[in-house]
Length: 98
Image (cartoon, rainbow, N blue to C red; front, side):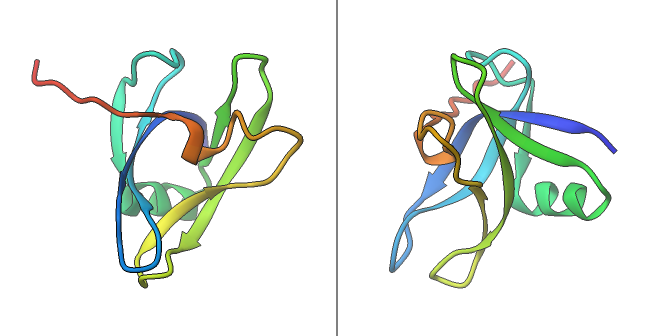
């Protein structure tokens, strides 16, 4: 069981709203070390891992599973005192081939 910081998101649109399809994991908010699909995150959660976001001030929000309005699995950050650490407010992931 481990805790993983989500530093960026990949989103797509669907009929009712957008949803997250993958996230970037890492300790540096400017560079993700690993890409995980929502399915991979859900599986890790089922195995006991936890995921969270953090803003520049160190405020964290835990992430939970969410069924998108279009019937697909997604992720949602739990509400707290600030919106700066919401998944929807994280930067978009920009993956490049190495």
